[in-house]
Picture 1: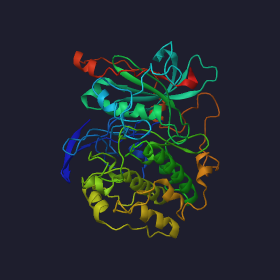
Picture 2: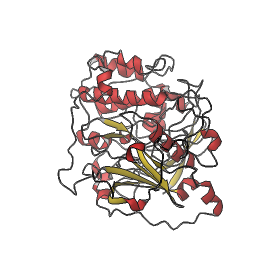
Picture 3: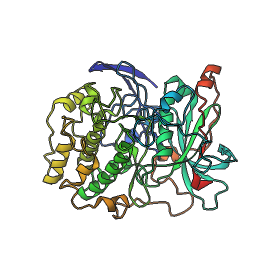
Picture 4: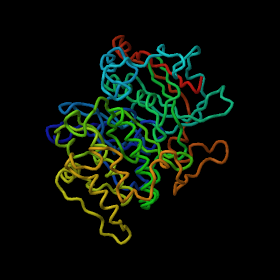
Length: 471
């Protein structure tokens, strides 16, 4: 990967990679597709944490996202899994102290971290330790700089349930200082249960790799469909945004900020409902909307960065609501609100330019839509929608009046768009990039060059996991 050092923004050194990420599935890869696929726009991304979605041309990887959990003085590394910074999970020896600080109740008080032995029936592994040999590898769904995601099923499962298996190469995680991000991802997948978040079913490791087996979402990435359709109707966007707001609320209730909301990280299930994935940039112990009770790490995806991140003034949960406004604007119009091919100009627009709506007879936004976009894309954190009372503030807006959020939570509304799914054996993965799905599915051999110190550093304690419903 060719890396060039970008200019400094608000004192933050940016490292921009020449990588375009392609579509993937319930994994943390980032996705833009092939360069010939006419994506809605080209993006430049700073590096991110967990695997990235590579774009169609493996030799020319151009990135869309910018993600990393580096501090404002550190060089940001490459993407997505994009998403992103550090919640705490069952831990490596190095970070066990910090993991102890995250209370699963969200209170921020010290709480014992989850281990394999603390409750044999609490989703933890019992006797047989699952390995890669227990799974049939069906096809590749995506590939990134840290590993790949494959469609798999368990060999002894009579129901033939499909899963997405995400593999991460430890050597790359160590080299790019991404071990904490992998822990964060596992913590969220394992511990936070919400109908709009992907869930972890199995986790195991070898000397060279980490494996996480999660929900397979056959509808593919929302980014795939946004490229195809260019933009969505208000009704379609309304349900997506409502479901996303409930997913964010679930994270925020545990004092976790997501920080990587974008179409590439939103998957569709078989009924057209959304599921959020890729929690590499999430961060725990965030108790406030802004600098107080927040953090100053610089991470995220360029088009979706909130002004307070760019200005390095400290940020909290409110950055996710800014990102929701950006996401809603993009779904409705086809482009993020402050998009510019020149990243520095785009940053300037995010910080200074007024919000403008398209003057296009084909894009007609209702006043209720414009109102919620203005409120979510408010540069004043104190008055930004949801900064004070979270999702309750969204429920009361005119834009969401047609929806009852209790029905939304139960997936009681029929989605406007139902993705086409496989009708015959062998058609699984049809909504993912054929550049990957045509690859032979195999657990690639890794010629490890890790020193004894690197091996010890990347040996995750209590990483093995099996969901209690799958015992």
